[in-house]
Image 1: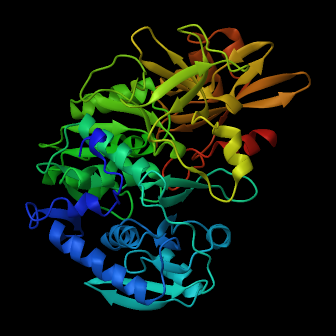
Image 2: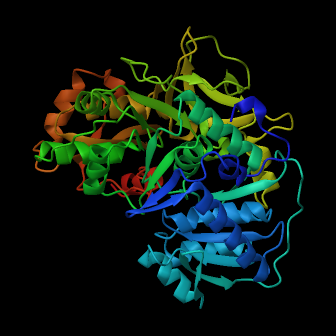
Length: 507
């Protein structure tokens, strides 16, 4: 599907239905050895839609899908689309309190749990008294959460109708739900698949959680929209990934932490053979030069870096397919999206200087659910989304992410971008990953670095200080380097900077 050919009445389930009858018997999803063809996936989704309808789900209602990656989760998403209901995709690995807060905020009529593949989902189902069902070979738990749920308005136009509600991580107070429309997701999925020439000949590995927009759109929806086969895994497991690579997957997309674990396995003697692999991509968190170099050496392929955010469905910038980049660019703003880089007063900055990136286009969210004031803070009346990310753009249009606006550290009047300090630390051979934050002191900020070493590696704070001294200007060097067994991370693998900030505050 070309990005300029998205119909006004498009719905997510059209991604699979459009392949019938030509690819009816072509594998769409493979889960633990069982294959679902495009025809079987479409039929199962329709059967689930009938089940949800009989349980009372109506257009504009919310269907909360609590689970981990599996065929049932994908089919539930498509079934909700068939009914014009919203899918609220929630990672089953969240705590009971976190899931309760999302449920209270979105007010779903039904809660659907992928209990057959996730013990965590089963516990959430049991807490709600959900009963077991099997529909079209899909086993799950489901319950009516709120018989009096108020349906949201339904829009015929795909640009107005919400398809998915995704709650962002790292928020404080009430959870923040990002409303993504069918048009948003269709545009982002089509852009992703077109950028890497995805076709029915491809087999895409999907271990990134579908509750994260990266795994949902850039991996699964992009692949299904192109007629490819998706090998879906409930969780990332190094052994399973290595086997999938040997079996012939052509795409692997992950966050930096996944590549760190693959490299550790390889260094530990695990043979990684990937005869059909043609595309590797990293997103969801900053990629540092040392990790990039090692990954590219292991696979003999350029790692395609990218940049996005949940509010942009998620893609904003991409490195062109198989383009070898020697620096840390996140690529170019995707076609069809406008971008501008501004200062604190909203004025365009000169080319090459750092400013906040703002974008406008078909990928930009409808807004935050039940939060018009929060929406107005980041989304202007004429459609410009403030990313709150600091970006520099080169003369050729290549973008470089310098960090979050709120993460900028101002030390002795100088701007310190955490990504620069992290890149210097991560270049040390003993360092697996790092996270740099600022800590307020009297009239100033200190640069604090938390560092996770490779398993079995030896290094101390003094050695790391000596290492970065040769690579960073004095004002950028950490005042303190703290070694930790493991950096706190979300289920997606993204480092939880809010937790790291709390760690720094306790020092």
